Length: 291
Image 1 (cartoon, rainbow, N blue to C red):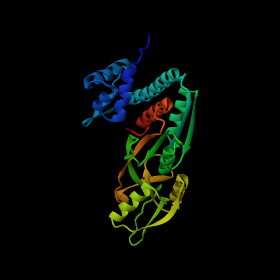
Image 2: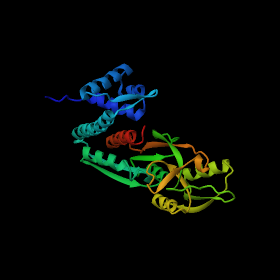
Image 3: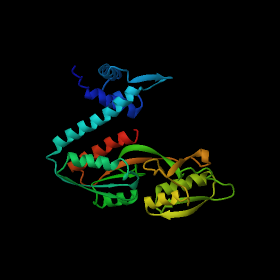
Image 4: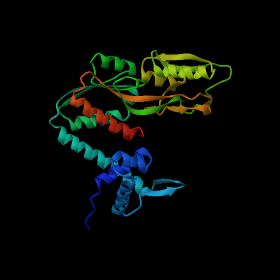
């Protein structure tokens, strides 16, 4: 018995549905009508011989078969895309200098950069991790070709990748954060820092007393200070260590704004290597940030 060849376009639609949360938005992304996208899913169900979705109230959720199919679909598409980029990119040569904040340096971005390097072995990729503001200062001085940064979406060179919620962060298992008559201990970056400013403004707006208990210029040092109970901090949910946990209104803390994650291009906008790296970073952001 011969096995069916899975439809790559249908697999891409399946992955898009899970990423975007609806068939309509997925159809728009893959450039098909909603009915055509629905037919793709039915074709996959026929090939697998089992339903991929089931009704849960008013929503459609994956069946066990659907969850397994989705896992395979992502792996198949990643390998397909890597193969296409690799074959097409063998002739691409050059250097791309990429800057990123520490929030993503230990999560999904290294895998994205590794995929890019495998697809373009003749390209030299120079990567540096630094604070958002410093990355953009160096971009403006011509020291980077591409920078991923948070909180600077108003710049003319900003290409929005995602809008991320800010969150308060404290030690895992903490219960009481706000204590009556006692200022809230904060662990924050040294200024200038838009997270620091947003947190202080939120507390002041809520008339909550606070004190700066721990200040640092290093993200790892910040995480260590919070884990040690020296103070709570605020960032996005990206890259929170397992020793820490999200805090919210249930812990007596005020709500926080969102922050834009953007890619910023350097002065050499004609660098084809930079453009290809930009596409890889965006593709991985879509898959890893739940966009």
